[in-house]
Image (cartoon, rainbow, N blue to C red; front, side):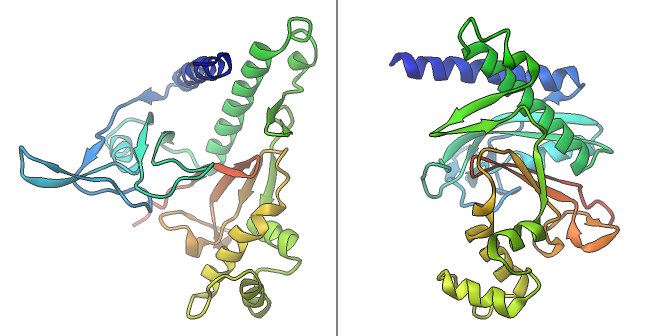
Length: 270
């Protein structure tokens, strides 16, 4: 291994330990749930398929830890998390890998806003740790300790020290497209202009395709940003906002142009 790759692997190991410490200190219990499952669930992804000889049955490698961890939550564990490997038999690019590690955290009686605070606090702490660990000796007592935490990603610096940005889905859509998301005719015209299929699709699905293709690029990659108030129609199992049932109590977090996490208030009213 090269010195650079060794530094990366060492830092990764230390960050995983700090994630565990952060959650353990807040009374979250770490668990391990099955990797081999009779039915894949908790996400929309193509699973890896295998055969269990002992029971002569088809099994799947998990595409998410969600459903089994939620069962533990319902079973009486009020704060629980799993840090585990996920397997998705799909494409490969700079943001996707068929095998990766995820962290899923669940809290009884919490909501998407308590998870937002938890996530921002965790990431800012991890960024501060990286800054202090990698900064030259004469810098470690300087700006890093004052909360000015900026870490490089490619050719840009990402600011983890400032309060993370927040923007609603509708606001970001209008910022990126220059038109409101409820102007369906112009949205469909924008879909055509960007080569997106939209014939026969529901309006909200066309809006979301345009949002993902165009509006997300309007985010400042140097500022971690929570995108909030997603349309309820594309947020299954998510509690609608009581003040506006058309939007969901959900957020997605974007850093350096990538979606790195999501949370929502669970729809648990039968």
